Length: 300
Image (tube, rainbow, N blue to C red):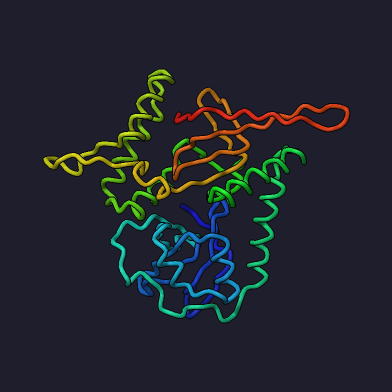
């Protein structure tokens, strides 16, 4: 994927520490890994941690030690910076040195990131036509999900490209880091699962039935020819709290036949949309009436 490098944070003959963003405004920090090949190793970083690092209040090593997010390799190509998911083994050699903190702090950049997130949460995207009443209601629901139910907030996804019922990167991260499956099994399990969710040759009922079976009883894959098959569990049913719960808003889903649907709030279990909420308002002389339609558990 192509990244926009927003700021070179440290420069010693070549850029050594780089702050980047992708087209979805996710934040990445890359450090120079090999000064001969000019390869970088990077991490996707949440806003809180990246702001602490930019303000000189946080060491970079704990960010890289966080196994809940993937590592990426980065490299310049024709004056543009590209990153790919790191496929190698995790080792201490990939981590930055202890005590790597910014001396020349970037308070203005950190402040702009915080302001941008607040604006996106409170006002929605620039294209959104969500009114004030809807926005206030959504904010209350999001606040409830975060504070009372400990859901992660994924952001406003109205203008995000390629929204899907299955967020493969989130699912892959959870299976690799939380459940400790190997990359080969994870890749095959996700392939089999998405092959079913995207199957347009069957009826919606049949697809939902097959998807439910995979969610409830796992995905069976064969590591290599001649080896025994293994079951990859997409949801940890025995330890429910070990799953990754998240919430996004203004999620635009583009279906077949150019049909587009936008949900005000979508809840996910580490990859799979399981609750969708739409808000509808009818106005009266003095006040308003809010009506919510919460769907049943849909998997397709």
